[in-house]
Image 1 (cartoon, helix red, strand yellow):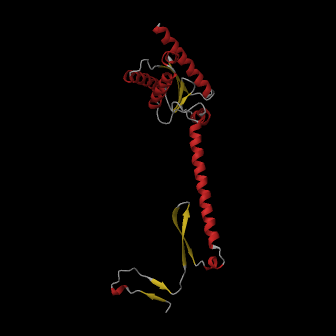
Image 2 (cartoon, helix red, strand yellow):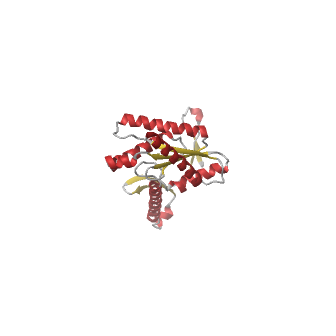
Length: 244
């Protein structure tokens, strides 16, 4: 009789089982990676490995493969971290000028090809020279960080907010209309005013803002940024004349 069949009629709780007369030999070997045991390698009927002393080479090759894979994963993680540092501004945490080519330009071109508008907002810190001259560059950096923080909080998810220059900021905002970007400008200015009053700084936190809505693919992103910059400068000039 080649097999033994368990009879369910005897009330056994075990499932229907067939025990084969053929026997297989299994070899369990622990697999270590550095200082940790990460599992077991199970080999079936591996007499030929034992007889020819191939088992050690097999396990060593397996460990070497894991080490190589681990090294690749660590390298990929480090490269990703370096890439993020490369396109982020260390002072403000916003994207830096390097993000223009990597993020802002592809986003702009993508929406222009689809015939969908892109809002371009250009902001410039006010009184920065006055702050640096009278309170020191640490306070000037505080003003820049504070304005950047407000811009980052107010600009919608999916937009690219960059520190474009020393005290200049650019936001590239996909699918944004004239009315929306006007509301965004007002929200940023109101938040700056509130931030300035609650933080009790001895100098005002203010910015001048210009914006355009890009809807013509004939013009480049740089063209639209320059146009927003011109509008910002006109506003700054007008506000300065009003204060005088």
